[in-house]
Image (cartoon, rainbow, N blue to C red; front, side):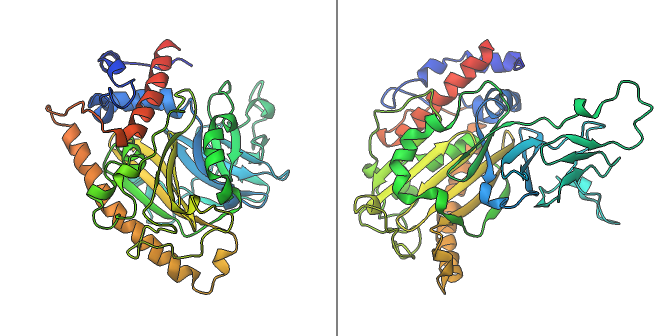
Length: 409
């Protein structure tokens, strides 16, 4: 399907993107309109979110047959479900009859949820999903198995009304889906990250308590850039991030803009660090880590939706879902070795860890909100980058490849 562009989008893409498609010592930032134009965000929906592998959540959220959760990506209502065969599937949740979202619930009396954005849902559907509007019913594979009183409709066949299924890959227990049936597989493009985090055994970790942050007032790319660059670490976060210095960033010569990841990593001042007021990990270090890995801060992206980091005792992720050019939802959760939740003080320690992350988020969120405000200015710059911001130049090169391809498709 062709990706529509407008004259404004074409002007933005013609505004010397080559200047951003360079290594960090020569590059400048993208034009400000890439962060503030609603038309450009609509272009990104087709160029990125409907072409790249998007992370919806984790497979351990749907352990049993019939378990499901919903997500809306680029205005597309989706559901992830575990089938009777144990397979994870992602499909459209838009009914093939009159387009009601089959997982939306009819409100209770005086419950006017249509006045605001409907909440995503989860649960167990049993053996089928039934649209509450006219009772069209679909099995766990998306096949239409019930359509009441349609026998007078000429030429109607249930087999012609299957819920569209997306391509799915499960990587380290994260569910990725792709709208593009011709997209290259994801896993080979994540080999660099796999090699770096193999000793953390991410696939065997279990999630802690998740937090959903909604309607954050900035562009998703501003959040991505902040997450992965080191330049602000001991500046914006002084003095709570003294263990992770900006100049500890480890230069990378292996970036491939056709790949699926952007990596930022740096050595910490001591092993078993922690993003909390003690500067120390709150749980025992993961037994399979090397001494060097216990003093390594790793942040990486699988754009456009997953941001991920590892500590010596745990990991954490941000699941990002932009809803407008200047609105973003983020789901934040920690990941822990499977035996850690059995610790008698696990929930107390997890709460302390979450409070530590909250301190960092307060500073980060204040900064990126201000950046979004500045990007709307007529004087917004296409600033030069510090070498500690190399991951931003990598991310921009990743973006520009996909922007350019979308113009040619």
